Each structure stands twice: as C-alpha cells, then as structure tokens.
Length: 117
Image (tube, rainbow, N blue to C red):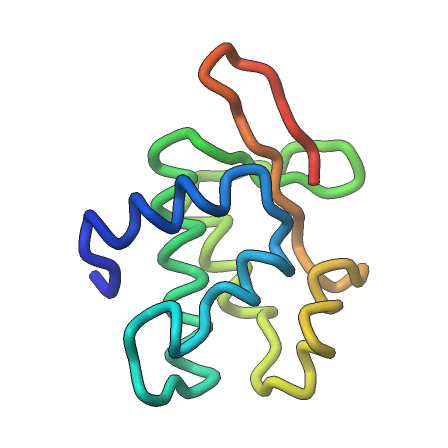
C-alpha cells in the first residue's frame, strides 16, 4: 500500500467530487512528500487511490452514462492495461476525456445521490 491511512483520508476528503484529471494532477511529488515521482509511481498512486475509493463505495466508474461492469479488480485491471505508458501519452490529463479511457468517476454521496464528473 502506497498511501498511509491518514494520508489517504486527506486526499479523499480534499478531492471529493473531483474529475480523474484533477485527481491525476494531485498525484505529484510535493503533495505526496516525495522529492521525485516517476510517471510509473504517479500512476500507481493514482490507481491505488481509485481502488480505495471504489472499495469504500465512494465512487463508481462509468462510461457514456453507463456504469462499468465487472468487479473492482476487473475494472482496475482494464484501467492498468490501457493506461498510457508515458506522461506524453496522457496529454496533460486530457486522456481521461478521450474515448480510449475506460471510464470516468461518479461520486456516491452518503445519501446515495450521484455526482457525475
């Protein structure tokens, strides 16, 4: 696990309601108390954060207004497979809006209401 529980909770609370691009932007060395952070490390933090949100039922993943099928592990495996291999391929976070991105984030409020990003 890359995030300590307290660290994760701060990120979760601060980023609630955010789009994948915004969450990606928050996964930087300064925010994670690191001197440097490679693209691969940053990707791992991002995917771990998404995984924890999914497992806590804070978010769902969806594409074109339809929730993704499969287990959390299956959804994340698909994300890992198609995730860009370099920072350049991510196009400054715009990849999350491209058709090849498997899905976006839908935040689930405590009352069950949904916030589509």
